[in-house]
Amino acid sequence: QSVLIQPPSASGTPGQGVTISCSGSKSNVGANAVRWFQHLPGAAPKLFIHTDDQRPPGVPDRVSGSRSGTSASLAISGLQSEDEGDYYCGVWDDTLNAYVFGPGTKVTVL
Amino acid sequence: EVQLVESGGTLVQPGGSLKLSCAASGFSVSGSAMHWVRQAPGKGLEWVGRLRSKGKRDATAIAASVKGRFNFTRDESENTFHLEMTSLKIEDTAVYYCARLLGWWGRGTLVTVSS
Image (tube, rainbow over all chains, first blue to last red; front, side, top):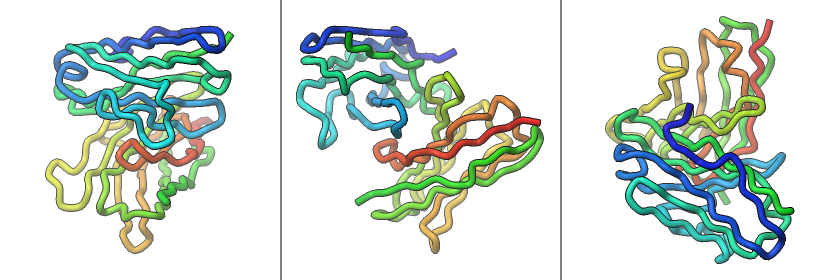
């Protein structure tokens, strides 16, 4: 059972957008920067967003992240078939003294 | 270019031990925080632990689920990061990934714990 809450799934048609939420507490999302990871089938996980809203090189600008209070979110606009996969939020938890991942959200492009 | 290649995954019996390796290139493992993350079949990502760069305080942090059984080591001469696993349980079955700063990841190695 993760200390972070994410919706199990999100979907949209090509060109639409999806937003994935990540809800935590004062000891994790409320205290530390959030990362988002993209995990496509058969591939290694990939850092998608770091420091709440920063895109690593190579991640398109139709991807954005934000954090407010004890919640964070990842938004992907202009959905493409290659966006299908699992997305995880991750953050350090000061109480657990451990890094925690959300349970993951499966994005489907209809 | 940063590259990470995991190896050592295999079938092992419950109660057994195994050592995974993560060969790094493009940077020094002693100069970066290195993590292990695993994914059990059909499950999400689970953080296993991390070893901070050499000389940093509180160098090791480890998940409660593996504390006392798993340990991390570094071989600077080989530029390799290791995960030493003991008292393995069936629920340790997973693909194990190493990652530098959680920003660069290897492709993983499969550990199966079964009798």
